[in-house]
Length: 181
Image (cartoon, rainbow, N blue to C red; front, side, top):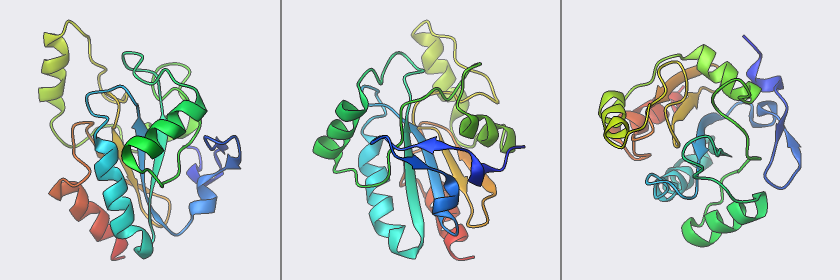
């Protein structure tokens, strides 16, 4: 498996980054989209970021247009949307694929580290099928707002289904447990 810390990343403003610059922090990596039924999760993501950031926690948002073309905007449009509508202050990264053959290397490594997700996966898949859609199967990312939890040591310690609200007690308990270490 690739060393997560060394995978090259690009911020939404075009600057270079890696997870190494976030070393020693607990990270919640989330693929995000502006035109999704789950988009209001931005509010919860910003809330938990504000609540825990002084304890060494960061949310890292990765816009992706993989699901229903729900992130069609440019980097500037995405950043503006997130700021104006949800007051997002956590780091956002360049739009890139999180599923399929062309998925960005970070997501390939995250999926390899934790192939299955926690939460209501089957219920979400049934809803997709009801809309005539074919949902992705594990280990692929199911939809927008899937969450990967990375410990201070850089290990991937959790993966949560897209429908898991950022303030869900299961996710909050996992974040708090990692922050306590």
